[in-house]
Length: 316
Image 1 (cartoon, helix red, strand yellow):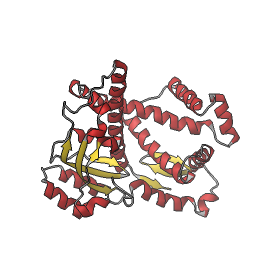
Image 2 (image 1 turned 180 degrees about the vertical axis):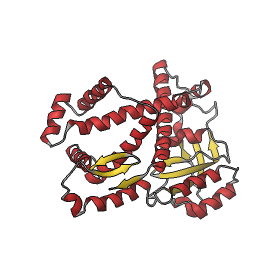
Image 3 (image 1 turned 135 degrees about the vertical axis):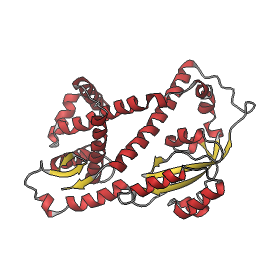
Image 4 (image 1 turned 90 degrees about the vertical axis):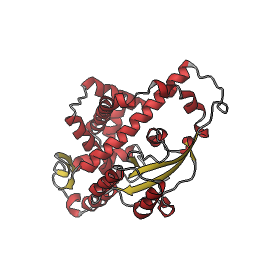
């Protein structure tokens, strides 16, 4: 949908940080516990970067191990700040249970995994730190968005349609997509805030897309071809399915950019054309849970984007 958009916030930060981290000064740093990066008032030390890089190499994390280490540590600090703000705590039992489950998914016990870490020069606290953030972030998202993510009775009535006919539900959309980086984040947010203040005709939206959008569809006024629901990213399902023709979605975080969609048309099967498949109670529950999870994911991505835009990331 939106392909290879230009510089993003995290990409810009990475370029800045990588030049710093590959300098002779860092490589010869005498105190690995000195601050390397700060995210607002939270510190990331040189030691933490080195440890996360070693971990990425151990588990064969896709991409450059050092770049991924920096990116993940910054994101973890942003999430941790939110956990502090909303008073989210993770108990020792919750952390231990997560560690045990994490080790099991890697094919061993917690003790075996810790031994593997030790053999690779990685302290167990490195894994405990990101697991604690993962548990806390999940608790925060549930606390903050559980009511919004619930599925109403009216939506539940369409579970069968959602389950069996996603490939037969089509949307005709237009988009305005803008990459977000440290230099333009306020301007991007302000732009979309102004865009949503008044109703835009299809023609007006198209003109704005030609002028401002940075996706490949911009040359066509942001217009996209008919797409079935099953081929669209799950993260945008909730944002677009309720839109009427001419309406705009809320800004959506996708491919490291902010995107607003305008609905231009819908094709939804009628009762006569629907598949007469009976959904069992167990299937119904699975589908309902899927809808809720998709909604949680969408809210979590948007919330993380907001926090990322507000964060102050600096090197020492």
